Length: 156
Image (cartoon, rainbow, N blue to C red):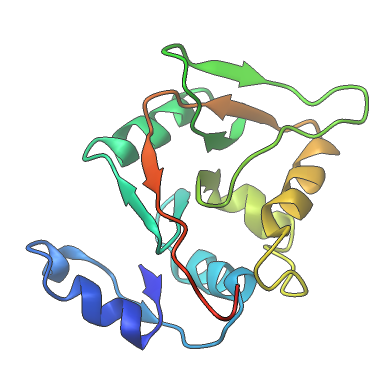
């Protein structure tokens, strides 16, 4: 988990806090924070969720289950009840949302990570275009649901 000092103080009260790998990151740049998380990740899949979201208890199980398809490079949530795997075509990328997505670590590392020039906005759009060129497929994980509260902030 990558978070700033304030974010870490909020998770210290969680009953599973001791099971988390905590990485403090205080730079106000979401892409740079995600790259730091990718660099520190030990697993094959890196999941992302924003600080103003609340995930359903089964969120991560559903989000990562789609990677059973060896061609899937990214995952996002939708409202349907069926997993779909989409392939970019006609020069159009598959739209993912950085607030709730997972990426194969090897794929995002080869792409060079998130572009730090996108500090708070369009970071996942840039990644979507990079996923499009080698035709990486994106799996839709319908039950990987989160609730977005759109936390107010002077920096967003």
